[in-house]
Length: 248
Length: 355
Image 1 (cartoon, rainbow over the protein chains, first blue to last red):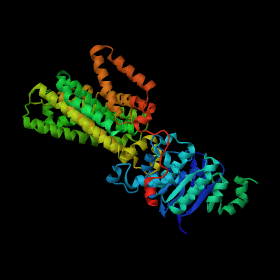
Image 2 (cartoon, rainbow over the protein chains, first blue to last red):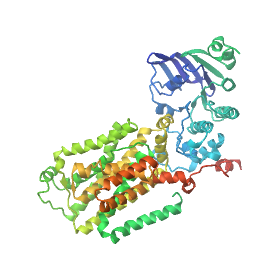
Image 3 (spheres, chains in turn green, yellow):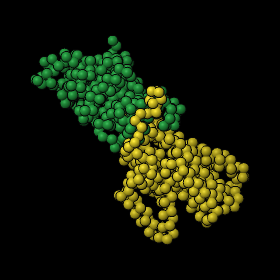
Image 4 (cartoon, chains in turn orange, yellow):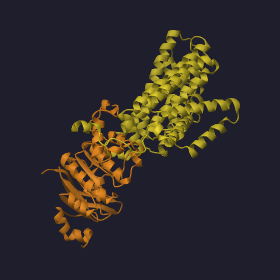
């Protein structure tokens, strides 16, 4: 089993605050990996480090065996690693189809693809199918900023899939989504992983979701890696229970 | 406005007016020519300002650069520029018809190209700025350009340059420059119309809505911004070159780099009509120009007050501009959907695949 992301000894401090200290995590290719931990434990900081939002202080981050800790966000995105945001980010004044069409991969960009007419060809077909996949097809012509928060999350997820990434980092995909939609979302995350072959790396606070979804979970606390293991191992790990899960 | 039929009627009306206007009102040929220039300025400003969300106050710099580039090319083809400008028009230099038109054609073309190249170089420096910082930074560029030209004696410094004189009668020359502005405005409009219908147009809108998200999705944001600004600069450069030839005498502060008049007008016009739309800047420019000319004629001494009042009402009550306001009010008339009632449940592609 190969690891598509290898994080080795990564530290990141903001001034005197040590957000991440000596963290090492592997994300196996083709699987779903979870990242949990209390608020402020450094999960989002680690995501930001991996996708190139800020330079790391020490350590190494490899994507498909290639060192990426010195690359910037758009370069890493073009390699095929995308992230979604905790605070959902979409192009709020454009309609859903336009949001999807501009989310195509920019790995190989030519004059032809830059100036291709929109609303036609393979791109619009794929955009419509993915919107149907997340259940937003009927709303495709609506201005995306007018959608509900949950729908915007689904749109952001569809936009990420439109980009055909190899790895998708999801920052709390179920936060703010109503409980009846959550099951549908879990199902879609699994299908994206199995049918489209996208490796997922997921930050999640909803234990039912993450235990159901992930094959391997890492837990952070106070900026340090506490434990890594299968959902069962993590649930029964005394350190994780003390720091995060609490006694049941 | 989005239906092909309405568009057709508007195009027919504008083109008919463009052709018949100067023939019916020969006394107003220059005013109508300036109106097309205003349309051009507002529309090209909107590429960055409206579509990309980068409010430039410095696009007028490319107007002036194009004007000076063309002047230098037109003169340098046949004379020494330094000698020509040192004489401050005291030496009457004769250009033959062939010389004049070769120079003009080459000058207009190079004006656009040089302005576009300068915009890329400036863009590499200022695109690190966002929001109000970008606006002030670009304003600084325009002011600096004017000062630089004022101090450069080779191109006449603050004294300016007398342009080669259009051969033939006065009436013929104003019709010729009128035609250039008219054609340039139409060409620019059709080009932008095409541009906004491509993936490139979507990329600009994406940068406007959330540039960080666009970067996170792998967009070459700097590349898109540079090309967009170069497109605006190209048209501004040619427009400046035509304007310089039409006026006949160019100097840095009032004619080439009028930051406080044309430079602000282009922003005000795009905002008035509705920025970020294809037709908004056109509507805004025509309305603004007509009001400006009317107040100049009938409300002299109050013309700046009138223009100021328009801008204040626009900014305070109709920030989205006339067209933006109309779109919010009657979305259906503009082909915008507000609810999904009665839509097909599956995409066409999936239906075909299923059959």
